[in-house]
Each structure stands twice: as C-alpha cells, then as structure tokens.
Amino acid sequence: MPGGGSFGSFLVWNGLISKGLQMQIKVYSTLTRQKEDFQTFQPGKVGMYVCGPTVYKPSHVGHMVGPVIFDTIKRFLSYLDYQVNFVVNITDVDDKLIVESKKQNTTVTELAERVTADYLSNLKKLQVTGIDHFPRATHYIGEILSMINGLIEKGFAYASNGDVYFDVSKDDDYGKLCNRDPEQLEAGARIEVNDRKRNAGDFALWKGAKPGEPMWDSPWGPGRPGWHIECSAMSMKLLGESFDMHGGGLDLQFPHHENELAQSESYSGKTFARYWLHNGLMKTGDKKMSKSEGNEIVVTELLKKHQPETLRYLLLSSHYRSPIEYSEDRLLELRRTLDSFYRFFDRVKRICGKSFYDVSTPLKFVPAPKGHSAFMGEIYKLRDAFLDAFADDFNSGGALGTLHEFLTTLNRFADQAKLETAEGNPGAKGEFLSAVTVLREITQILGLFIEPQESAGPQGNNQLMDGVMRLLIDIRADARKSKNFPLADLVRKRLAELNITLEDRPDETGWRVGP
Ligand SMILES: [Zn+2]
Image (cartoon, rainbow, N blue to C red; front, side):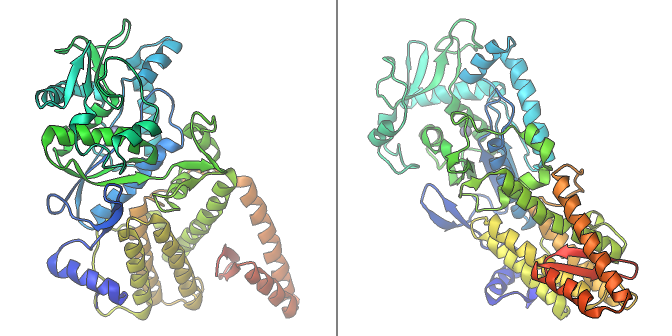
C-alpha cells in the first residue's frame, strides 16, 4: 500500500499512481455554493486569475491575503503535477489614483510605478513567487476597447454621452454569482446614479475623460476604462475566454465579480471562470480591517517588527474563506510556534550535519517507497493527512495542524534513538534525514521555511525565555553533580508539565517546546 496511509488516502493515491493523474481535489465555488470535484478545462493545466490592487497607496496587510493563499494553492497544484498559469492584475488607472496623484503633486504613472514596486517587494518577502503575470490595465487598452465594441455589437452595452455602459437588463443571468436578483443587488449597494444610464444597476465600461485626467482615444471619444472591464480583458487575453479559477477577496463579490462575470459571458457566450474562490478578510477585534475603519496596517511597517514568515503563517493559519484575526498578540503567539520549528532545525543541523534549508527535494509528489520502516510509515501517513486536508477545499489551517504532528513525531524519534549521543546509530540518523526530507517537501507547499529568516521579530521575549531556561538547566546540572537526583528529576518533570522537553546532548542540554 503506497505511503502506508489511511484507507481513504489509499484509494486516492492508488488512482494517482496507476493513472498518473492528480488526487481528487474538492473546491467550494461561490457560484454554485457547494464543494465540487475539481476538474480543469484542459487536462493537467490550470488557469488562475486573482484580482490585484489598485496601486495608489502602499500595500496594507489585506493586500497580501489573496496572493499568499493563491500562491500556496498553486504550490499544492504544482506538487500534484498541474501546470498552473497564475495571473494577478495591477489596476494602474482609476479615480483613486487620479485623486492621490494630484494630492502628491505627481503623475498617475509615477505614483502607480512607485506603489507597484512596493507591492512586488512585499510579495517577494512573503515568498509569493508563483505569480506568472502581473498585467497592468494601461497596457491592455486595445483589448479593452475591442471587448467593449463587441458588447455594443451584441446589444449588451450602449454608448451614452462619451461613456459606455453595460445594460444589466439585457443579461438574464445577472446576479447569479451573488444569487440575488438585480433589484436586490441595487438596494444593497451604493450605486452611482446618473442620467446617462438606462437602468440604475448599469455599470461603466468606458468613462469619458474629464480635463486633466489620463485618457485614450476611443470610438466614443477620449476616456479611460471602467474597473470591471480591465479584469475581463486581461484575464481573457492571458488565460483564454474560459479558465479554471477566479479568486479575490470576499468584498469583491459584488459589484466587481458579478459585473466581470456578466460582461465576460455576454461577450464570449462561454463559461468565464469555472470556480469562484473568495477569501476571508482581515479583522482586528470585531472590526473589519479597512481604510474606512482607519485600522489598516502597512506591510513595510509591520515587517519592521515581525519577520515575513510570521505574517505568511498567520495568513495560512485558518481556512481561506474564514476571516483572519489580526492582532499583535496573535503574531507573537505564532512567532513562538515558529520558534519551535527553528529550534528543531538547529537539532537537524546537530544530528545530520546539514541545515534544514539545504535539504533538497523537488516540489513533486513521489509515492512512498516499498518496504519502508514503521517510523517512515508514520511519516508518510502524516504526509497523507497533510495532503488530504489541503485537497479538501485547500484547508491550509488543517494542513498546518499536521505540521505540528510531524515535529512531535520527529522529535520523539530523535529522543528514542538517542540521535544526539554517541549511541545514535548511523542507520537511525539516515532514517531521520529521510523523514526530515518529507517535512521539507510539504513545507515547500506552504511556502514556509524556504530560507532562513533574518532575525527580525520580537526577540525580547525569546531572550528572556532562553535566559530562564539556561538557569533551570544549570540548576538541574548542579543538582545531578551533587547527586541530588530528586531535585534534578523535579526540574525535568515540572518543565514537562509546562510542555517543555529537555534534550540531553553529549556536550550540553538543550530544550524545546512540545513533547
Ligand atoms: Zn478584478
């Protein structure tokens, strides 16, 4: 039985191995409001589009949620041998950019380039490396114009006094993403009222230019594209008229995604995106993190206090559709969790003589070899559990849970086989390294522990903890020397009750949080 995994996993892996196909993934789509079997338009290929930022202000933490989540989804799909084409757009012309550039006494182009550079540098720090294209709206004006033209020709759009609007009354499906009829949608949203529109819910595809604004020539006069049409034109150009996954924050569901869907399917007559994935938004306390609440956190500011890995870990710690609870305390708590991994990596170095970061393994699923040991059986079972969690609608929070079990299992093995003492035999060390390699393989899916973090972060707490632990270890060593074994045992026992394990090595005693 490959992998020595559970029976359920066996069926999946058996299919994977015999047919060379991917394991069955379940994905919840906002469009159907249910979990569906993941099937791609083209076998083995995935087109994925996620709405990116309007680049008028430096990135805040909320801008990182979608990229981190979908980068992780891409890593998982690539691991299962899919070829993923991942697009995140940059909205570089918009009312907000026009207003902000005037305020800063600069051009829209200069502001957009500066803010885009900040965005890209933050993504890099967070190990978001899987995005294949960052199309900028202003580079796709030709595609936007021809799509608007097509919509007018098909009777779905009309020009009105320099603007062009999509006529929602012509689209029978309008409202299907949010599962509401157009009148309800209008009542629930702030809809721009103007007398150029036929219906209150019609939205602009093209906006006639006002003096001093960026503009392009068009059959309807000089102007600039509306926001929604940019995403349709860029995604179709880069991924085709039908693609597999469309993602974005929950706040984009209406009107942005409803409108994107309506105009795209009216234009092509085909399914636009098969699965619509909406990620939860950041929350602080019971408040949404947003500009209007004034509680947004700028990424570069956050990264002065916390290492990027802690932020990535936070964004993956719950299911992507749930809200993400943000607080300073939560970041500190997660940092302590990460520290237990970093301490384990020190242990790997001591035992294997090489850094965890130098353990190389491809981001590809390989079935467990036949005839493995009972210990490796446990490891492959944990890998199955990790992948099963991820295959169930990309449950990264559940997958992170199995990562902790990995740590416990590996530490226990190192203790029992006395790998840090002269008694540790080379065979057991080799097995330990094989297990560490599996851990490395799955942490790559999460984009965690890719490279050592610079020592950014709240060091104060850790130094204090280290100091106190050093003191207790010295007291225990003194007690043993003077043959006061009850005291030595008491120190170990009381620490164990606090979930701290002492690691006796030939030359010193170390410690870790966890069994
Ligand atoms: Zn979009």
